[in-house]
Image (cartoon, rainbow, N blue to C red; front, side, top):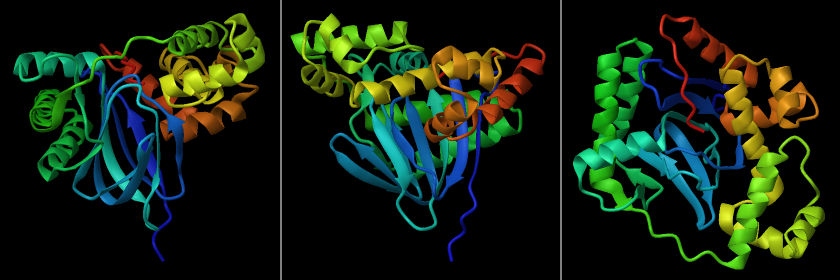
Length: 287
């Protein structure tokens, strides 16, 4: 029988602002549809990961690298009975833009057209960043990070397509998102939100999914988790964060936080508290 044990560490290495790290093995865990506000680069070290995108499902095996652009809605789950193990880097968009500007090989906004690539060299470098950070070697971690980002941009990078002209539906989706952000702890029903924007509930639902890859309620859960992360990073307790972002109680936060981030909020907070306790400890948010 394949092993069923799961483990994960999601943390931030203080000397590298703008980068979060996740090393994990998942078997039963599934990530619901969500998006990151920075880039995602995951090196699969064992098993198979399945990534669900609007265009369909792709599979990533050992030696491959998963690359996801900011704000791209996706799911993730095991694609084999043994699950999958991976080491993931979450660099902020600004870090990618800085490296791309130094390379000068991409005109426009840098991004990636492929979600999964077979690139053992890049996968090795991603794992090397993790090892250096775990050993506390800031010089090596920073150097290796820039090397792997440069490789990924040179070999797989592409300019992201220009955004199409904004339609009335897209404008309504943007206004709806702003309203949900403002009223995150007490959002209105879909019908009320649609009436405020002088549109129909179904038209708003369709426009929102077209714009953000998920319906408003799923987007709101994702937004609440992002805000909860910021609160946990600055020292709030999970119970305090749950109330502040609109979850009914801490177990409600725990369930959604663990599904989307991959670790429970208490573990996430402890890692950040350990960083703040170090001399000069800083925090950086990447999702």
